[in-house]
Amino acid sequence: MVSRSLPHEYFVLTPAQKTGPVIGHLDGRPIAAAVIDRDGGRYRFVGIAARDRRGRLDVTALKPGEWIVTPDLVYAEAA
Image 1 (tube, rainbow, N blue to C red):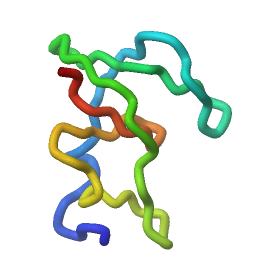
Image 2: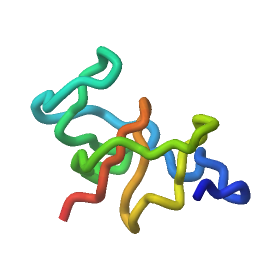
Image 3: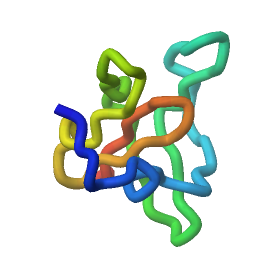
Image 4: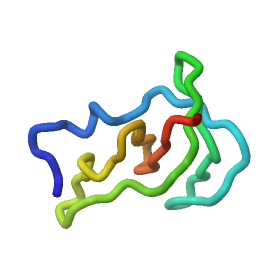
């Protein structure tokens, strides 16, 4: 279910600096194993963000500590 009351922008980690090896590609763009936010927080790649039939991001599918990094990549806080 897509939340209409929660804009997806609230769940986007930006800016995020890519770090670590490239572990795949999505639409021709590299997927980094990890990213670092502006405060030095580290996040690891955990999957692709879900979308509904209209193409909207399903932010309710995110688990606690998960963030979206464009384009549609999901990263979780590293322990």
